Amino acid sequence: MRHVADIPHPDMKLTLLAWNGKYLLKCEQGPLEQTYKVAELDLLGGDADLPQLLDEPFVAAVLRRFAEMRADFGAALERHDLV
View (cartoon, rainbow, N blue to C red):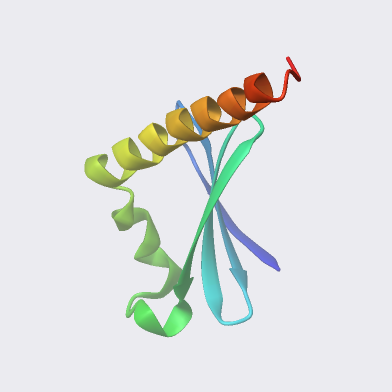
């Protein structure tokens, strides 16, 4: 796996990796992680095109999903009396 870039963002860690003919956009917030895979051949401009995908609607959806993930995990912990 090759590290391509760290993309600055105030609310999460964004890392771009290349592996096995795909780009992986790894989004991390605390202990939670979301990974998006894009085939290298799907991007005409290569890895330079990927940061364009990080527009406001996409980033907002990723952050909402993190909130949902945190709530889902917290609810599971509570259901099983683990907190």
